[in-house]
Image (cartoon, rainbow, N blue to C red; front, top):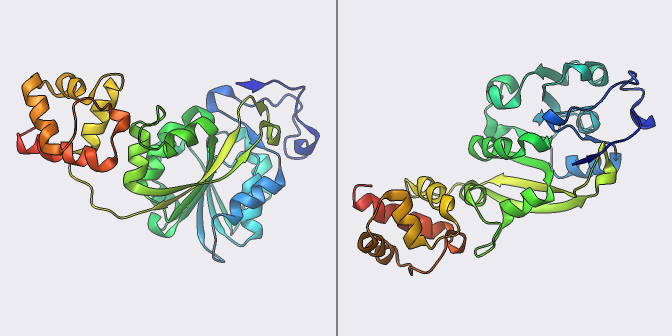
Length: 278
């Protein structure tokens, strides 16, 4: 939830001269005001000069301007054309603006580089942070530094046994090394959200994952309040005896719940189910 304010703040009036400009809640717009936070985020990318950067949701350009100063080659995807004036001063050889929904475009095609050679940065719009994180984790850019709500960061980093642990946690563990870099107070944004944000760095990892493991954790977390035995019965139509047999083959006890399983346990369950043709 955002705290409403009295119009455009003074620091943004040059970029947003329309006094009636209002951020759109449906797009999760909270514009970063604190230049020190922008500097720290860009520092965390460890950029090389002329390195390719994809920025999702540049907003008023707080990160964009720092990237340009660091001589990055920036492609910025923004859905709100009302921000054209705020971003215009950076447009040119080092900045390419793409007016589109970031969930609906081919990132590599827009940047003109394979994503494993592209750094990604974003103050992720709150409204679509989950879907965008899924895309970032599965599309695997060279490195991603993103700002999300603290509760989303807690879900990504949740250890085995945490009530915050879920499908997004496992997807992250399967695809990236995630680091919590620092937290950002709501006062750093306009409008000011009633939540703390967190900056994460996601570095892709290459590890072989048992085929079907994602299908298993996605299904079992639909029944996170039940034991794994009951969740297997509900999700895969197993009899109690068959569910116990699958757990035994995976080396797991029947009293565990999905959030108490490590990534390797879901892989073992996937292998046991595959051996039964499931």
